[in-house]
Image (cartoon, rainbow, N blue to C red; front, side, top):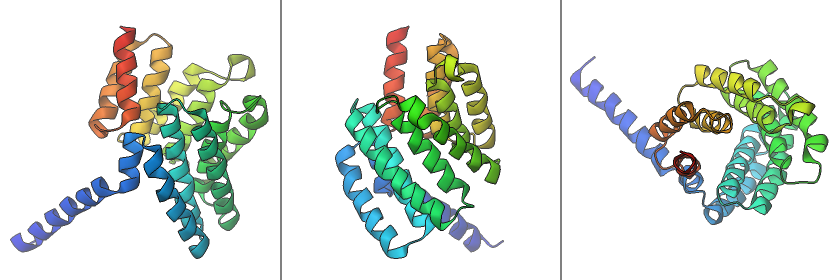
Length: 231
């Protein structure tokens, strides 16, 4: 490979990094900026209706999942509920367009799980469907790391009397990280579970890893602040 070609390859990687950093949706997610996410979601929804493709609706669903994250960070259950409901509608559309899309089922399960904590009797009404959709996602793609995270969150929030298990949550999160070590969301939730178990050193290690992956993500920063208070 010539020096010129090497330089062009390096430049391509650098520009790709800048492009990722410049993504306004990711920047809004990292800031937990609800106001910034709303127009981005509106634009993506319009584009999805025009394209009418599973991938476009998956994008809308993912953006709404980030809106749910922003709602959690800002302690705003109305935002979480809105993001979940709108995201589920998009994910269901994606599933109808491509029933064999692991991501469409994963997003449907993840977003349905978001409803559990913000609607009356959410666990009984939505828990099974969320789990079934995430299991379907893993059946279609056993290496869908995000689906393992969604399943873990379900185990974490479900009472043990209804099949919940923090140990099972840890198992699924570790599996997600084994598939994708740079999945910040997996490290954040693993830290959350460890915190609840009183394993503060393990939690701190996962928070540090999440912040290494994405230093600006408020979800991880807030968990760091809570971790320091708990010491």
